[in-house]
Length: 240
Image (cartoon, helix red, strand yellow):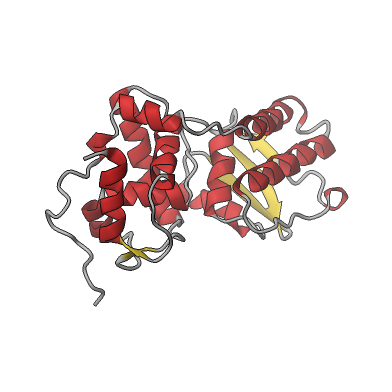
């Protein structure tokens, strides 16, 4: 039986209600995200090709998919991404149903990614070199406002603010802030909370996500820090 990580009422002041509109605006504005427009632009180019010439020009379609994946990978700076050479797999990316899904080829197999099908999102991490952070970057670029980027920083801050809930949802591997805490299960939890909070304070989901990233960045902690110490740092950063 795994140990419980619930901290009771030690940090009753740490809740997602702290992410009000002024706080989200303040922290999200700290990040320029100067390279994000590049990712968003490549996603737009991909959808333009899907819509206009998926059957007429498969080489252009697959080239825009490569461009999107590589741009997202560079944005997240994860391990090198390995995609097959373009000439070998033409016709391998197709979009259908007015941008609700698309099909890609991974290791010779056709994989369909659907906006609303959580199981299908994991097909992206079958591509060598793509982790959940890069995969969610791609999803966020393709379906902004519906998907969000999840990485170790914003997920860490999210768990710190809702520690007991995260513990009940079995999202914690240990009693310490590990750093490497991104998984598809955590993403589904994180995404739903970000979107709900954004709606509650009438901001775009990306603003909540960026605010969480900057809140974590402002902490004086690193991998292996006990959650208790990490949450004290969140209190300092948020002045509670």
